[in-house]
Image (tube, rainbow, N blue to C red):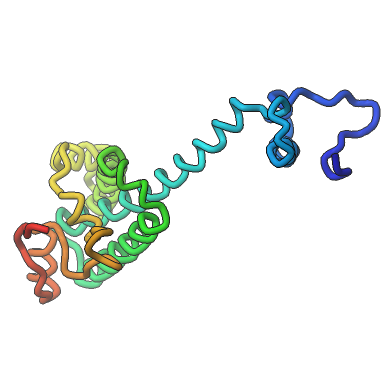
Length: 209
């Protein structure tokens, strides 16, 4: 074993599973070395499997977080009637940025498409919660006489419980058809607002893929 992974003299070497919890860096170096040497008896299989699975979960969380932020912005566009044109432009631009990163994640990890249903459901819950909080803050700022708790309760009541958006209208991307997200794809109600306020010309109805 190299000197970089050896323990100080006089200290017993901890079992691999114990080392995982006390010094994960050294554990990872030793486990990689054991796998290269095909020393399978030295492999801490339970934790190695857990770490491999965590790589996939990290990619899922990344896509879900981006989708959640896109949904948050879409809900603000649709439900914040007092938004300025500048705010609408900023939100729509940021949605496009999130879409680009979401499509990158799918291109780099196409297996994530098999998790779309679960990831999208999780993104909706998170995005709706964030939108409720943001919209409540705006309501309180516009009308300080309304306390934030009341404003938040009202937004939780008025925003839809079930997701009104289709996955393809949030992502604007289908890997078999698109090399990057489409600029003209939006949920119909969002498209109507952008067209009315910003004079865009997005389709305001669902189109078959």
